[in-house]
Amino acid sequence: MSKVVRIHQTGGPEQMVLEDVEVGEPGPGEIRIRHHAIGLNYIDVYFRTGLYPQALPGGLGMEGAGVVEAVGEGVTHLKAGDRAAYASQPPGAYAERRVMPARCVCRLPDAIDFETGAAMMLKGMTAQYLLRRTLPQGGLQPGDFVLWHAVAGGVGLIAVQWAKALGLQLIGTAGSDEKCALAHSLGAAHVINYRREDFLARVREITGGQGVKVVYDSVGKDTWEKSLDCLRPFGLMASFGNASGPVPPFAPGILGAKGSIYVTRQTLFTHIATREATQAMADELFEVVASGKVKIRIDQRFALADVRQAHEALESRKTTGSTILLP
Ligand SMILES: NC(=O)c1ccc[n+]([C@@H]2O[C@H](COP(=O)([O-])OP(=O)(O)OC[C@H]3O[C@@H](n4cnc5c(N)ncnc54)[C@H](OP(=O)(O)O)[C@@H]3O)[C@@H](O)[C@H]2O)c1
Image (cartoon, rainbow, N blue to C red; front, side, top):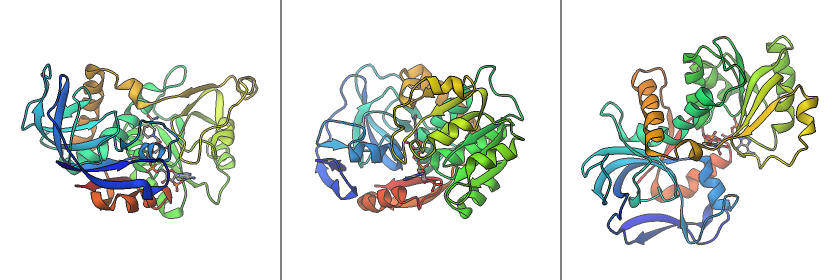
């Protein structure tokens, strides 16, 4: 048996209930893992509210770290007793133990503890594919300006440090002066409190009217329109989330009028579709974390049983960095 957080219907944090669920043996291509720590991500909110649909009753959570208890037929990269961490579909990480596909589960290097592993896999591989693969024509060179919204969040604070290591001038937005100061201290070249400052005017001022080469936007509805105007000609709008609500439909013609700009909507799950691709991304993440170039900040810890408070804190913009749940 395992304590598992499930939803029987979509809605607010109160829909999440802790239940005792039978955990069976792993089938072909699966493992059973005992979590030591579980990562909280904004995508969990989208599944809880129903913005992202799933069959009900359903689990939540896509990031965790722990010890492999058993492996199913055909799993060769893991064995019972291995320390492991993952970002993976389907939702179900909010649990003491779970059976899950092995494909996206990676062995966790000894130098990285379980809490850090749980706090970094989904967020870190997201920062990785955005900064390393989601690039404008001609790529990004040291000194280039990029704009990153919600920069003091889980993905954001990893991206700040990674961008600095790549030599980029990251302009970050955040919802309070304290959050801005935190992002600045970790390597953001410029920070803008977008609750009291006009981020478009500030970006124009900082870049001498040129604009940025890429906007990395996970806020969605509230930042979309002005973000397009922050781009240089041929710049890239990399949309990857909807914390304020989904981006409304738009006419492609505006992309020409705003400087022949490009728009893409990316999701991690396309990037980690195979075991090989997942391992290559995870290895790059492990390397930047083990080298100290990127430090994983765990600014909030909650007991798994207190998951409602964790969601309330995340949705009310009270968190910074990563948040973990402890089973
Ligand atoms: N597509 C992908 O592959 C992928 C993968 C991972 C994450 N994501 C997305 O990346 C974003 C960051 O994820 P995360 O887990 O690290 O979360 P997070 O950044 O720690 O939390 C979300 C942040 O969004 C900001 N925000 C702006 N408007 C908001 C609103 N109306 N309601 C709530 N928050 C608002 C808040 O920061 P401020 O107060 O500073 O504004 C809040 O702290 C999320 O949108 C997530 O869905 C996408």
